[in-house]
Length: 178
Length: 173
Image (tube, rainbow over all chains, first blue to last red; front, side, top):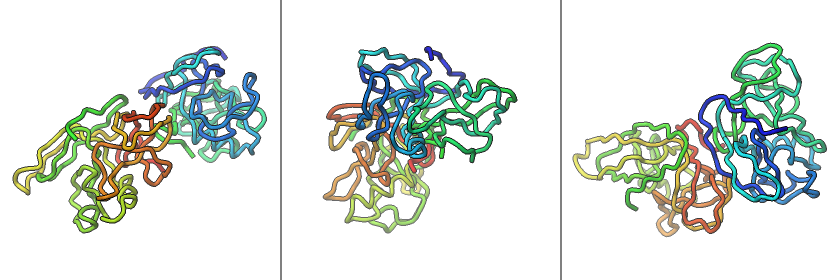
């Protein structure tokens, strides 16, 4: 996925977070704080699950040998927000991460009906496959089955939608949805 | 502690809150709402729904930890005005209080901090009183009034996201 600015409107409440040199970030990536042993790693350039270092990682680095449900909760509890800057490999730096606002993301299940107020969650939060860093999944109701790694709430009702507009809920701003 | 402008960024969502005439408030003070009986004077006070700096929150003379754990339920935010604690005891002054946002606070004790770690009120164990303008790193959610918003080594000051009971961000649960 290339760099895409997905912000639509609303205050972004930007936070500055550290990114390690062996981590690649693109604008629009969902970002998580590595606040727990074994929640990130097993990526192409990181061969082990890492210890907690409290730096920022894109969702694609979130993998674990733990059960999917536990991993989903870990994502929700450590969800930082959306990268506003890119970080190339080999550079240890600080980047801006938006912790609030309304954003437009592609739906993993194309052309589904989305309803205002319903939850939007991370995609494929399973132990082995990792998590998509720039796509979301719609839940028709607040008690939808599947991932509990909720990222926000839909702000527009639409049928046959390929993209969904949603209000971001992050742990360190308005608090995570559960 | 003198008046210190501690606001850094994000919307402040200011509210106007009454303060009793005898209470001194300085800019940058962490404030709580006296909305229940026995929050002050070692647990013998009457609620007056006015704002007070944290040093007044004292349900127990014996335990700093007990006092700190009361904060999150009554935490208003950061004072943006100052006022002298003098005058007619029946006089009420309104001040502005920021209920959300990122603020830079002194750390006591200084610690290395990371984004997302809990921020708690700091205090002196000898008097069991909390400081009005100092915070500390904590691992205890019951004490938490916000998160650190930056990574800093041996931080004597740090940027913190304050999560208040009455603000748009809500308190930490």
